[in-house]
Length: 110
Image 1: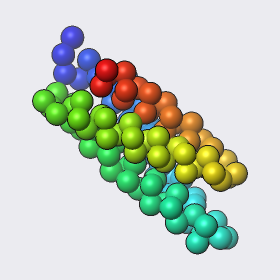
Image 2: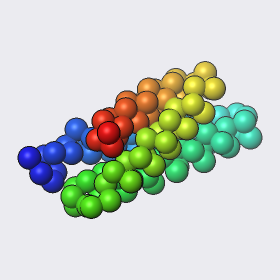
Image 3: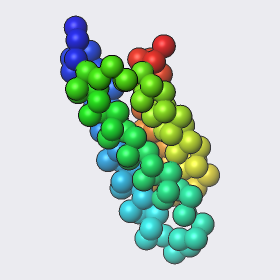
Image 4: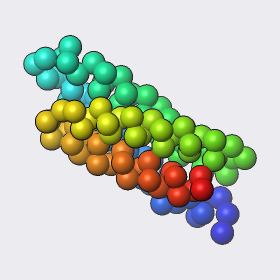
């Protein structure tokens, strides 16, 4: 199995993670104490960028997938760690999917 089929599960989780991170960033921006949410918003948007790039490169069967997925796993872990600092449902849901995404990326890297 090569290309898309080989990475299908990871592509799916990366896209779900990107979508949830976008939602979380948007919801964080609407919280009353936005100053307290700035780091969460920033990490959410960075996670969106790397998860989207990772999914696209896996779809292309890039020669650089492992390097990108290594960074993706790091960013997802950082995002999950930050989201876990907040009690909002959107942050908890985001932390959960980020952790799953990091785990799935790590499976391919190793």
